[in-house]
Every structure is written in structure tokens, then in C-alpha cells.
Length: 621
Image (tube, rainbow, N blue to C red; front, side, top):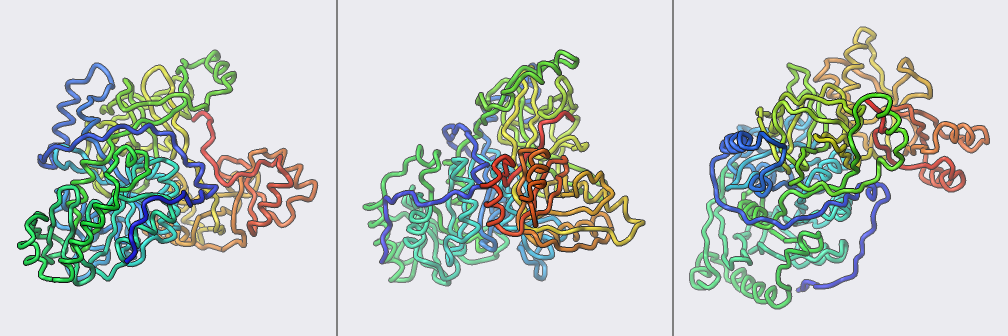
């Protein structure tokens, strides 16, 4: 039998594009969880708090301390959306969990609400769900597992304070899990590991521990230890409380029936497990883990150096509530973010002169803590047509500091100095469902109406100091295709649909140089499925058809050297076989047919300053 390895050297490699997502968040100590009121108490609690804090935007410490948020990451088909649904079930947010693949009377999942998600049984867009659990308020960010939608997952992780890595017990670590782990590692997120699908034949728990440690250099601390697997999966041992939780298989859409037996009660335990081999294995595992595993070090958990490890089955509800309880006890409360700060100027010539002369505006120089006296937050996602009847547009804002209050006026990181936006209303989010909210606090995600001014990565703030959090980049696409409407009469609806999908970051758009909009539009995506989603949404949400024609290029590089550098390289014959285009902000982009050519040009023509990513420009809007 393989035994857990306690210490190994760090053995992971960072992908160059992912390195750009590093965030210098300062992690705070977790706060113990208290016990449960009803879900509806959230709005009442925050509205009552709003009435007592009208003098400033300072968020009450009690509200900060009761927030927890987490993003769930996994390889496709690891059960991520099912896990999200079951967390909502045990959190009291759902009365009955849906199944990802609908059969008979099963419902569609709450977190998969797009028509294409329902039809294919996959998540293609990050969603946010919030609920009260005990005296805590929990925000869950359900992310796409499919690699074609990696960018949406990266953005969601930028808004998270904790992450849950979901593994398939039969497969262990898989490619997409490895990529997403790198992002968590660079953001130093506390990472909880849940090994799912223990109701099916599974790898040895020790083997999974070894995989994580050998490939990631990450030690694990087993919290819930499995008793059997497949048809013989009986339950889990809670190593913190030394209690065995035995589950009865029942209705998969409802909460599991659980019997708790203290480990000291060996007679009852042996009788209830009713399997001599599993009983003996449990006793052996308990002794072995106690001898070999070092005590739980929460400081290392907060730094992302040690991962609490859980085993269970989301489909059969085994271990889900136990995981939720432990996460609420162990997860970190909202963290601050590093930001660039400077004085907000009034409008006028002096403001423009000061702005032009400030060369260090983008330098990250301050930690904005949750208890900072002013409101701040950043946009990590935009979404169109959550309500197709009203053609609405929503910006998802992660609150970093202060309190959001209905009707507040905020500055905007890319707007002219002194310009303010009135946030007349905001919604708490629950998949596609929304509910108006008067006040929200650090760690919360709110949806605000987006008139078209707010883009992914933008910062909103109050006060005299302009706050700007590091932007969220777009990454190099690998698929390119022309898209056009076959029906001239649909041109207006077609263009509106394309514009809104581009604003969401669902896809990128390129055009020939100096094309003001009359020429062919090139869509750029990470994967082929993104193209299919765009066409499906154009049809279902805007009722327009579209034709696509693939282009034979495989990657893009932005030329930070500017158009003069591109013209020089082109005149010198260095860009033969390379397509020169511009992005939506008219910045030069070069399309290559292979990695070798891109690397060669970047090395030989350094003045081009080729980079595999781009952020929205820091121009006034």
C-alpha cells in the first residue's frame, strides 16, 4: 500500500500567460462560524446595517467577518456544477437540487441557465450564487470547466478569496485542473481539495495525496477520510472531531440521511459499517494518518501551502454538508487588494495637465483593506440578456472595501477625473435570478446595470483618492474566423449582438488595419466551442443567423511597440506570412501560423515588444 509522502520539492511550472494574473492580496485570519438563521435574513440584516452607517461608506466589521466566498475549479465532468447545486441545497438556498443532464422530472441546474448550457449539460459561463448559512453569508462562483472557456474561469478566480479544487476520484489530476491550479498558486489563494465521485470505483486516497504533492508541491491534510468506494462507499471519518459519518443512499435530489458514530464506539461502528474488511481498513488508516500527518497548520492553509483534503460524492450527497461546515470554519474572510492610488482631480485644464504629467499612475502602491473607509470594487465579468425580454446588460462587481449603498455615486478608473456614475440600483445574484439590494459589503458580488461604460477589469470607487486595481488581461486566442450575417436586413441586430458579446469578453474581435467597421469582422477565441456559443446566442437572443469561415492562424501577439514598430518590421520584410490586424481599440495585433514563427519574430525584432495578452487601455470614457 502506498503511503503518504510528507515533503517533496516544488515541481510545477507556470505558464507564461498565467503569470500575468498574479495578485498581491493580503490574506487575513479566518473567523469562526456561528449558527443558522433563514436565507431571507440576509436582506433584512444588510438593510438594517445600512440604516446605521449612512454617515460614511465604512463597512461594519461584523458584516466583513461573516462573508465567505469561494470559486470551484475542476476539469470538465468532475461534477463541479452538481457540487455547486448540492452546496446550495445544504445551504438552504434550494429545496431540491437539479441534475446536470435532465431526465424525466429532473430540473435544470440553478447555475446553468443559458439555453446552450441546458442542452449540452455543461457550464459555459461563470455564475454567482449567494446564500446565508448560519450567521455567515456565502458567495459561490461556479466556473466553466471546459478549456475553451478558461478566460471566464480566470476572471472568476480574480474575484475569489478561496478556491475549491474538485477532483474525479477515479482520474485524479487532469490537464485543466493543473492549469487552474497555477492561477490559484500565483494568487496565493487558500485551496481546499474535494475528491468527488467516491460512489464509483476510485483511486486509493493515498495515491491521490501523492499525485497532488508530487505534481504541485502541495501538501494535503485529510479532513474527511473515505470508508470504501464504489458500491461499498459507506461514509467518511471526520478526523477533526474523530466521528464517523455513515450515509444511507436515498433520493439524490434531497439531503442524505446521516448516522454519526464516535470512533471510540468500536462495537457500534463495526455493526453499522457491516463490512469486516472496511472496518479493519478504517482502523488501520486512522492509526497510519495520525502517525504520519503533521498537525493542521492554518497559517500554511491561508498562504496556499497546505490544502485541507475532503472525500465524498456530490451526486449522492455524501460529505457535502460536512465540507460546507468545515469550509465555513476554515475559509478566509474577505481580503484586501493591492491598487494604484492618486488624488482625484476636478474637471478642467489643470486636471488634464496633472494627468498627463503623472507617469507613475499605474504603479501599485497601496493595500485597500476591506475596512478601508471608502467603497471600492472591480468588474470581473459582464453579461448581456440575463433577462432576454429586456435586453439588459449587467456588470458583476466584486466589492473590495466599504459598503455599497443604493444611489451612491462612484468614480470610474478609466473615466475623466471628477466624472461620477450613479449606481441607482444593484442586484444580488443567484444564477440568472436577481433580487434588488440596498446595501452590500466586502466579499459580496453585486450586479449593476451597465450602460456600456464598464468593462472587465475596471475599478469603481468613492472618495477623493482614485483607486485602480490591476486590470484583468485578455489572453492570446488560438482560433480565428471571419463572421458575417447572410441576411443584409439583419445587419443592425447582428451588430448589436456582436457588440454585446464582445463587451462580455465572451470572445475577441479583430479587423483589418484602419477598418472603421465596414470590412470583414474576425472573431478570435481560445477554443472552437466559443464560436459555437456565439452563433447559438446570436440566434437565440437576437434572432439572427451567422456564417463563419475559419482562418489558418493559431495564435496572436499584441505589438506593444505600436504601429511605427509594426510598419518598420513590415517594410524590412520581417512579417512575411503574418497577418496584421487591429483589436477593438485599434492596437496592432499580429497573427501567426505556429509558435516557432511567433517566438522567432519576438526574439529577432525585440522593438515590436510582442506580448500574448492585452488589457483595456487607460483612456477616458
